[in-house]
Image (cartoon, rainbow, N blue to C red; front, side):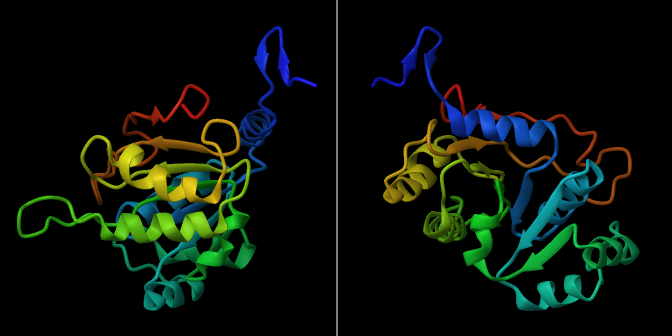
Length: 202
């Protein structure tokens, strides 16, 4: 039987995710807990979402697990409260990415010798995500990079899971906007641009 209806194809994963975002029952994961990623954790937590923070730096994870901040404008008391309450889970175990419904990539893209963005961290992160990718997840690239990176670098890696973007999982790009330590421009107040890989992802 065809899945088509008069209103178009059925999109159960998209509908379920949209509902979970609206009622704040979804879990948001952020990969890369630096000056961009950790403020995003704070913003989503303040909005009422359960969060997970991923980083390959075990020292950062140890500090966060102990309720200690390493970013000046994020108080340790806030981290301690969230970690103890269970609404923020810091981890270096990338296998747990499957536990997040929305995954934001906030890893560095330093310039190489030819002044081009080094995408090795993005590529490695995409492979971690691909290994844990499941239907219904939304993946958002936040790292600063050139146009086309989401389509040409991230998507082919995720597609190795034989899942279809726009129906099985969703992919978007939203370039990071952060002015560290400026109380007038926080992750909650700076306007964001989001571009979806397809109409459903966007």
